[in-house]
Length: 138
Figure 1 (cartoon, rainbow, N blue to C red):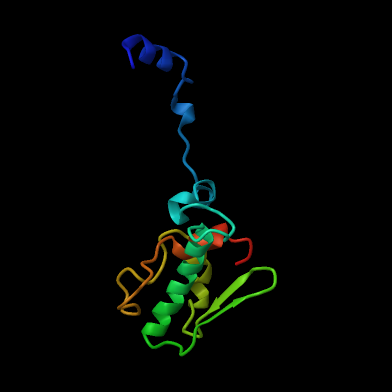
Figure 2: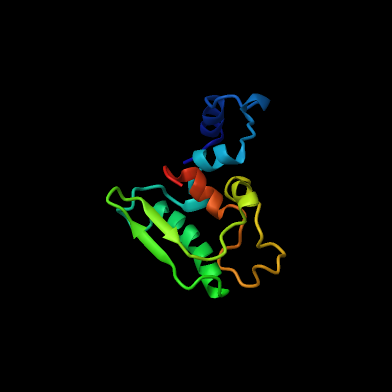
């Protein structure tokens, strides 16, 4: 049972909370430090709810978007002997001049108000950026 004295004892033993405790992280640091906010639990793929499958889904969503809109006639997913996965859609691809922005700048992409993406599985913003930041190979 909680009493006023037990609550008071609890709070008296807590660490101090000051302005020095407040941090602003770069978005890349945030994804790496708190991956659960983006992909659920980490894991290595042995469990069906491991985040690695969310990362794979993000890459595949982009391929599905291209395919559904008639850009490309094939999607391939290959897994090599080391467990690396390659997703390829043979679609338009990201215009090279904006490739780094789309893969490495949060909230950057063409799915906000562009005519280029009338229908979209992926809604843009963090998906492929999370894949980029949480992958050992991208």
